[in-house]
Image (tube, rainbow, N blue to C red; front, side):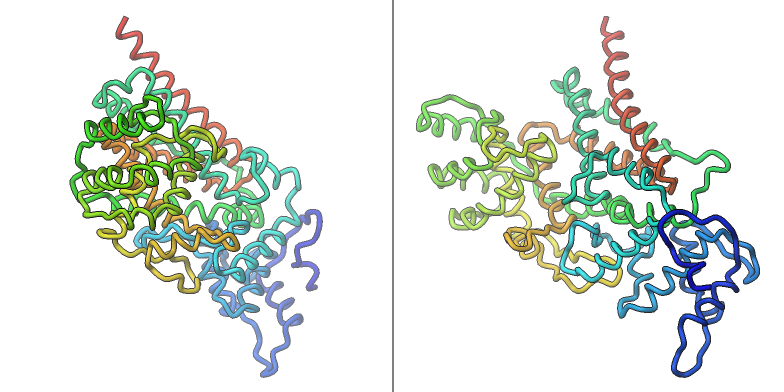
Length: 460
């Protein structure tokens, strides 16, 4: 009887009832006090099943697919056999919950390896009765690497599509910030309405629905709280225009380097940007202080050197698809923006506590949490922490370039895009999700190209 409700290699058709599962569990689990498992014992599991993938179980004698019953049994036993409250850990993000973007994923192990092991084991069991060609679909569509989870690669792909859209719009509109802002707004409106639904009869089996739910849950946590965090970390102090000061700085630095460049010229790499502070400490310190409005010493900037290197490396990878630390991908503005981001958090920023259900306490000092990511042994950076520094970096960068209006319009566009991707993830069917993600990526790029084409026709 026990084997009937266990996942095994291959697939199993057929139906049974919750009552059958309860009888099998009572035969499998003999409690010392003789207490029996009842329908009430399964209530937490059934509530979670409905909240996570929308499957509601009726009466104890209702005929249900074996895949549904196997999923129920698996979740019940995993929850019962661990000291952690597993179902609480896996509960869907709540709209009114704490604004955090953290979740322990399978390959991005934070400091709670036990929770990650639970999720990985669940996914492996659920996948036993899913066609291997289907479980590979998401990985293939995302060009997934072994050292990154589906959620991480999904976020990376969305960021790359964001950048493609941005480049398409910058070509014709980049010289006029108001026009560029309007272009982003035009694309944001339809994205806010973009939602994907399965056609009738396309409901996947429970194990596949739960499998996709667990794989994408970290990203759903991110979507739920990203806009809240963006608002929470917005720079509240005035950002001063430093164009003339930065150009004078570049003239001084260029004389020493025997080459001419402006503050927006990409001539520094991740491995060479520290020379600006080493060779021109007083001038750079004055620029950072003027831009941020925060009194700053050379020693304070020196303390941030390793930190800005990691931040600029993340920026180069996310926005420029550059992984070569020796590539000339950075400008003087970028270096100043990175220093400003850390000085602002140090003096003005709020605490941030990475949170997910059932976590161990990670602390709330943002800089200390960031510094944990500098460790060679455990270089994990919390998503919310890196986003705090990146968001302010982008805001300073946009202000230096005089594009703060289009920057904010671009952020609103990205939030709308996340809502559209959320609707794709809710499909639960692996093939439908893979197809939906590809379609959405193509749609977004095509919409930007169409907007540019329409604009060119009007100009003619």
